[in-house]
Image 1 (cartoon, rainbow, N blue to C red):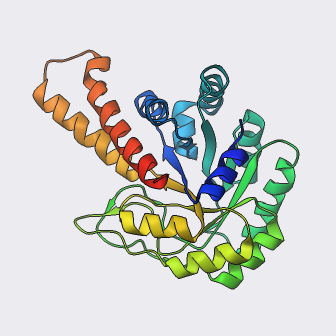
Image 2 (cartoon, rainbow, N blue to C red):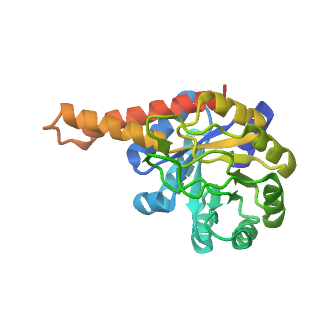
Length: 279
């Protein structure tokens, strides 16, 4: 069981795989429990900060154990990796996929390091994802759109994919990192997704999924999106549930009692998204 096989199944069925960022064991087990309940594939994402806090080798070992011994269709992605050295580290640790994020670099430097990452991954059963365009960096509740938003043109997407040899591609198509306070996130440019998908001929990844409408998710999947990232929505559920638990149980000291509701709240978010992406 490998990630590329699951992506091919998603392509055949015109569905998408949910990618869920985790920061701690409660969020990790929330995703695992969602996979057990739905029997649908999921990718656990760990950004540089998240894997420094959780442990990169540790999350890889846990996921591989669950995949090999329980047969769960669950995988690990080293999310938003900003240097080739950390791409190397993630590949060597056994991640199923790695994103080199060069969105803040010049387009030429982005292509150079992405190609270096793709070359290093050859023969190692690791998918390399590239990202082009800028959608912000924060997984927070936002007062407004991030500064410097830049969408990916179809021409740039084709040039980037051909130049780098990536196996997954994340364009900027109206999506943003984080969720806007009090209003829905911007609509996706579905036609742009369709045009990029038709020309690059590799699976597309949608970052910044939190805050996007169900209708846009469904349309984006039909247009060619095969992996969808969810993070802020999970963090909001975790924090809201934790606040409520602490308010109602001010004298409780046992972590497994304090954190159980947060784990369940995150699981509910993950299950709902997995079912929508596979509907």
